[in-house]
Length: 320
Ligand code: MEV
Image (cartoon, rainbow, N blue to C red):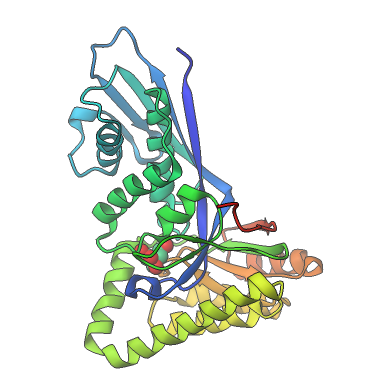
């Protein structure tokens, strides 16, 4: 039996992170510059039910029954089995690799569960719909991050830009004109869960001020949507930079991220902001085509560990 592989991209939040946890909208896009991959090999001479899981990057090489029940891989595998109504697995070896930086706001955990769920279900002869993969990945996210909005698993499962509101039907976003985005890594890892918990604490201490910040972010997200769908992104840059100011106010930026945002703007970027949970991780900058090289050099000089260029293509509304 041939090995079965599946991949899942990373993701970037263009607007609305954190506020999205409080039922406000966010805009997120898949990021194909990085991806997670899961490969399932049949191991016919191993006893039935022996599932070996190997993820070298995190030093993991164990069988499924050795994993804690609340381990993300165990939740994803049991989620696939439950969805398919399967009570045992044929012996197999699952290898997980990923080029998505961990704890960097790029959806690494969601992408791994999605690649794993897809590869396993296909190996079992029942490829899953995107919506079914999304449900499983959300269960994993809930276990790993406490109160996730679901935006990461949604944009990665469907692999296209979304206008996302928690607990609402998914809305795919049209992108009328292609955009060039530079992504720059601060090199600082910061897990999302504690960042979300910190915002919650500050919100509880001062709901009025934080409520106003979230409303202001929501307003930017709505303007950005209109701009992306109707005006070809011409106002997007300033909206991004405003979103970054509000993320500073809710306490999720850092001096390193601010320095990268400033460097991008000084080099002529149209707008820039941190992306994801903050505390570290990445910034994104919207750049005109002729500013890409200059902005890239400026970001590296300002301490970026690496940069990626994302050419976001046009997206039309899906047929249904
Ligand atoms: C993380 O990618 C985005 C946050 O808004 C958390 C979430 O939506 O679950 C910070």
